[in-house]
Image (cartoon, rainbow, N blue to C red; front, side):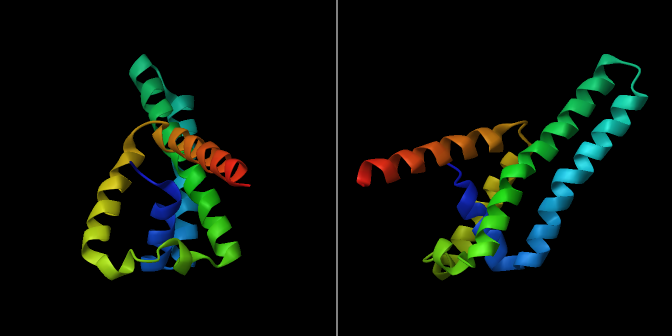
Length: 127
């Protein structure tokens, strides 16, 4: 299963915080703008479906962007990817494959919500 926070931390560890923040910001804004453009010019159901798909791509980047902000604010990248960098090739392949899940509409936000609720429940039960 994909771990959204670790995926973001891995990207930050490999490519740097500023680059990833810019990538995720563009990942949110550009597909939504493209979606609006297509929607305003659409003349068929398929064009509207395409606009919805591009909007879903932008929405998929919102949890990534929020995690990047949180990790950057806490400067917790080393702690987040502890042990992953030792197996750089294996981890890199895994996280690259998981990045393809960004193409599945609305999947990343749903997974991020489930993971946030699960981690919150774990914290409450361990106290």
